[in-house]
Length: 354
Image (cartoon, rainbow, N blue to C red; front, side):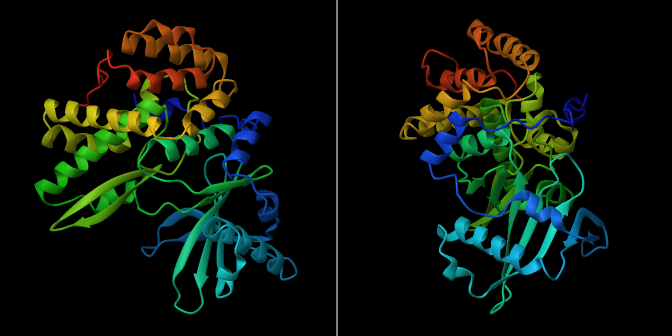
């Protein structure tokens, strides 16, 4: 069964606890004054946004009254200055808000802001979203445990996030799959590593609509890196397969690439490499990981049924009954990652896609 069908599209948004607020304040993730999600709901009209091929993008461009537009655009530019320059608004002198789009599918209905430099027409994006504790934990775990840094801040019940650069994976799989065997091997290797990171940190719902592929030229070949862009299903669902991208039918081209170009020995090697890298990032996180876990292990970000179900599945998966004593999703994430630091434990887990 496709794992996406097992994920509720009506997942509850969990509030940010006082304990989590303290953690976010400690690491500079809270701002006292900025745009609010509700401010952007004051639009009076919306038009469908189509791509260059005339296809519906599932985003709509929203329009504001002339009397309100200057205030909203000014707040958006200030938010952009916080993301890019720690609040130094002098960087926005030659910038303007070109477009405000809202995603019209799913539950969270995020806004995407397009910022343009009037001198050279260069543009950038950022996002304004509803606050959700699962998403924040996902963003923090990505920042600490993955090779990808994440820039965001919160203001009251709003998250403002920097744009993550890359080709949307669904478009990449349709149009940009690499031609040479060497590039296919490199992409397959990255998919194995991405699959492992998601499973270790319990980031769910990584079908091809929820991550991007970044390409970097490396001498005569391409280097690939996969970046998650949706963290709403961080440590929420009870089924372990939800945390393994290999089980989503949208990712089948990458799974096929892996089975065709990597031997089981290669897959095991790359899994071991990634788990070792995650363990090293925990060790050098300067106690930030421990501070996050102290908060997450006390927080409620899923139902008791989901927590108990996932704990039982992982206990069976790893042959480790300690999972069954976990009381929260944070406990499960903590134990999943702490396994990497136990030298007596196997370096990987038995879920090879090959």
